[in-house]
Every structure is written in structure tokens, then in C-alpha cells.
Image (cartoon, rainbow, N blue to C red; front, side, top):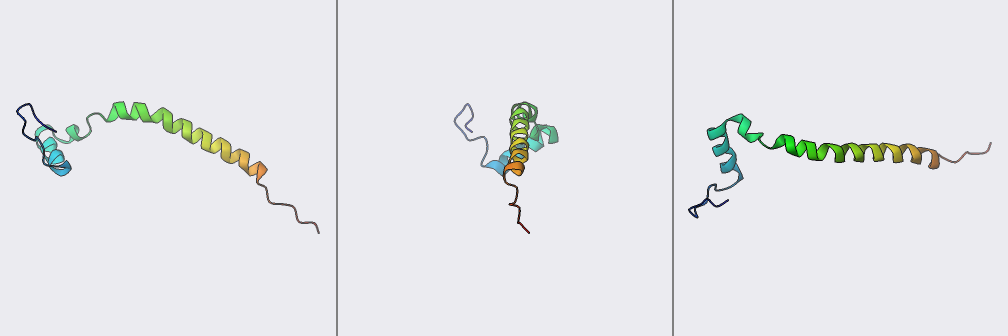
Length: 69
């Protein structure tokens, strides 16, 4: 990420995390987490619902064949 004067602000991901922690504390590492969770939660809930629904439907269709005695 380049700063306004053209110098690099960070030298890498670890450097960015260390500098963020030093300037903003532990809360700075979690900034922006809530908007991302609000975005991801409905998608994950829909995915889970569809998976469980299809799994229950497949149990009825994929029953093992009956073996005659």
C-alpha cells in the first residue's frame, strides 16, 4: 500500500499486522469484521439450508436395495 508521498507504508503482511497492533491495539486487527460477517452470514445460512435439504432428499432416493430372502 503506497502512502501519499510514494513510500511504502508496510513491508508485508506481518509488518502491517505488527504496526496496526502497535498503533491501534488488538481492536485494530478486528476492524471491518462486522461488515464482512453481515455480508457472509446470509450466504452461509443459505448454503447450509440447501445442503441439509438436498441431503435429506437424497436419503430417500439413495436407499439401499432390498435383498429378497
